[in-house]
Image (cartoon, rainbow, N blue to C red):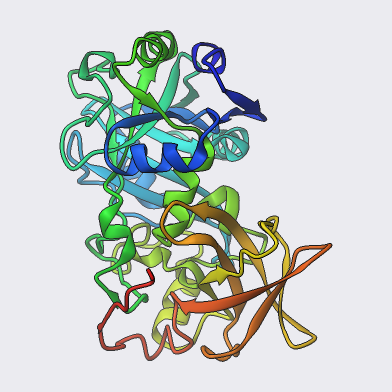
Length: 367
């Protein structure tokens, strides 16, 4: 991210540029399709070989065997108890399947894929020569110059987030209609690393706006969109975060963890459920990931992501016990302060065996 990190106002921390001095303004530019976001917290893996799509189909939660060139999808790798171990956005170009993954998961996911090859004609590998750039785009590449997008095998590598549409074989638990994620229109383009400098030069010249990771994540949180680096812990199953919507095919062939997926969906209920919390902003404090969520003095959950949104103010995603009442008065323990939190249901308490909840008009969350 050297080109972007040298731009005026750039604040770099960890794996990428957090912001360029104005996170709220960057959100507005990003949401309106006027900005690009260098996603330094993503990595790119590639799987080549004639067996790649049927192989991924057999070892992941998603049906990929018939994935067409240029079609975007999403997959999970579960443990035998159905808990999420890895997650990836997937795009095939007719020759290679490209996986966009959270950087913290890339090495472990690649190692697991290499162990699972057996005698099949597949070759998983790290692709360090590519980076990822995000943007909002109703069609095409939006503000990302099309000439900078990687096209190694004739198909531009632009992954279009399927969220929140229900993918074939998927299932939606969130009852809001319209879904807040429908406005996000998120894409992630795979570009050669050297293209980042060209993008940064266009930003410096005034031809583009740039947004940091803080802005990109705020739009994700407001869209109720789960992410491996945030919503996944050692207990997470897909049902808890509404991930059956885009990352799980309920009727395809067997894969590791499928029994739990089917049992919880058809016969039981997930033990936790994802909620959006509208936070009291009086203390100007955002809770950290893992901050306890309390009802009275009892801990009922934990924050997974928090953000200051350009329209909705301070918000957070949290996983709470299924038994937590939907109208409960919640508080987030942010260390030095306790923050009052109004709960908005994402995954309902009766998700699973009684998942056929009616679709309700979504009440405005804006004042």
